Image (cartoon, rainbow, N blue to C red):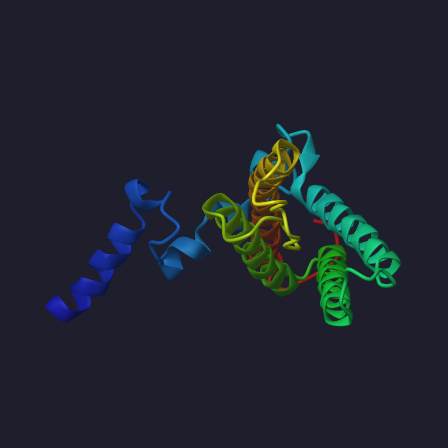
Length: 214
């Protein structure tokens, strides 16, 4: 009947080669079950690598997590050293400490998730990484539009009604730092997405989350 033919027609359309490269198009159940990735899972396939296929996405994601943790620890140490200064309020110092704590905790959890190969933890960090990119992009826009004069603080930059050339250069440098940070974090996100794809394909191949090697 026409009511039974409609789902079959949708499955054929969703499984067509023209739509196979579009992640927004839902895949049919038969296609997931008959997927060559599920049947012939190769952990060393090029789609799970990064850095011009010289590094596996899992190891690359671990390096990214360690890089974030080191930066957050440096930021935390600098905040602790600056707490006694008169130009920093206690509320500002506490907020920066909380930011460093959240960054360290999120990346430690992400590192553990990579180690135990838990795809849900990796998916959580993908959301966190996306929010981090949005924050730096918002800071970049505020610097461009003049709503902020610094990435993290807004010290007075006008002296005798004028802005010096050195201060303008500092603002321009911070604009490029914010933009560069956005590009780097977006590249990090692509590596993490490859790692998630690896864990997701491995899950469908094994039938469960496992730390065992394939």
